[in-house]
Image (cartoon, rainbow, N blue to C red; front, side, top):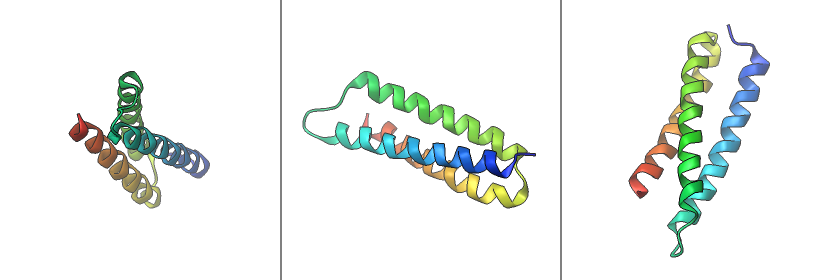
Length: 86
C-alpha cells in the first residue's frame, strides 16, 4: 500500500510537471514554435507520469485513489493537448 507522504510527494511532482508542460505547450502555440526536441521530451515525461500514476493507483488505499485518478485525468488532458497540437 502506498504511504500518504509518497502519494502527496508524487502528486506535487505531477502538478509541477503539468505546469511545466503547460508552459511548453503555450510556447509552442506562439508564432515562433518552441524547441521541437523539448516538446517531444515533455510528451515523453507526461507518458512516464501516466505510467507511474497507473502503478501507484494499484497500490494506493481507496481514499488515495480519487486524488490520484484526478491527477491522471489532468495528465491525460495535457497529453491530448500535445497530440492535437501536432
